[in-house]
Image 1 (cartoon, helix red, strand yellow):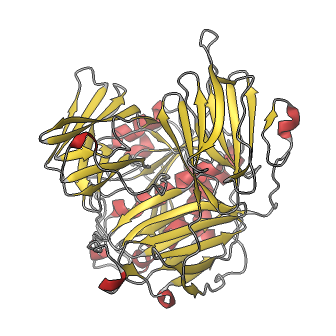
Image 2: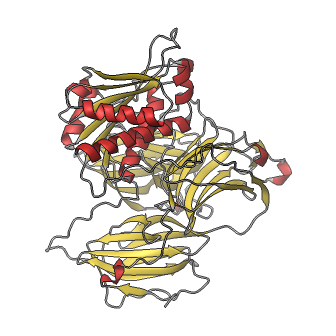
Length: 622
């Protein structure tokens, strides 16, 4: 039965299909800082990374043994000499991080420096990429496009938690016989909006229009054509108030591509801009109540109405030499997906659906890209499919090529290529693993995480011209992600660099029925007082206990001066009905705090300490 399909329709489903060690770690967060060529990542438990540099193309491969990702493959587009960063589940017990360079570039493996601040907090400093000799690369290398560290451009693709993307074959020519300086090649949903990868030149013009009924936003890109993979493609999105997105070639002379967004009336307006790293960045132009929905936490499936006709899943089969798992239904379907750690398999959940009586799958053998696929009728309205990839196969993106089809990408590890050098990884500084964060299972607690300032309001301007808004946004995003990991619903008042006034922040907290409100800021005083450093935490009325708990957690876990817990009449504290606090994580004008807050590893430690304090308060008080 090892290589045959199993149809589980009974309580046998409760038996674990694949065992995991009890002490397996989990990759919580990762981020690549392009301005400093630095990768940072945090695991739930301790890990000792292994690293090597591989050629064709040149890429730094970092394996995290005994670690699971908890989701499908994700990637961060970088641009310039470093093409992208990918993170995926290499095998059942190894998460793999790949930093891939652009054609024509390489790294000196002896200059790649690992540093473990603790067994669960790591940073990897990369040297400046070097150009290869012209004879070793037929493709001209792209020019570096690294933005300034302290004020990244608004149009840069979001770098924190980007979405999964497959390693697709080279793009096909644009459809319809059109020629254009720019070709729209592929589409990604990011943590902040949408990113459309392009090739070729730049667009002549970009126009954005909203329909009178406010339910459609058309983005016309003049001087552009569609590749075959995007031709007349409709994508189900269901993010940021956008339900569907469609690409179409509106005209051929001059070539013009239209990107149509189906939105709710309450959705903010959207803007689009071209970025020199090779793509269109499409972002909301106002606040969006974003529920941080890491794929480790699948959305709740609403029950189907009795009058609704359930879709029937007719087939689940492998195609394209095992590089795709296709799921076919007799009518429109939708799905959510995540990596299910308890059974070490990728889970696809299809609501409002049932299994056909004769549904069958392919015969699996030793050469198949998956070792087992299991399906079941979870309840009368929901079908669940579990996919266990074979060693060396990574699960990519779950796409929807049409209303009745789902396609899961399965990517095999590339054939073995020359190893340019192993990279020594020293043991972490501390041999004592960081204590796991408190968990609040099955919680209905909602926490507003409020990154102050944003957009036209940079907040404090510290030493070297660093902006407060750029320091506190990644801290806030990490706090929200950690809370979600531990079973708490987290809502960000802003999830990118745009302006949100104070009143809408308060309104968002009240509208979502939040239980707690945590605003995160960085402090400042006159630049002539670099001696002033330290942590301050504020409350107004009911937030004193929350303020003290978070403050104590930071002091216990982060090296920072203590300037106390204080009462203050800040707007967001006075006008919220739930316990509310404002955390000033340090002084950007202080010589000590500025250096620490400029370090991504330190910011990650601060985020973990804030999240720990919130979780401790929830356990004790809610």
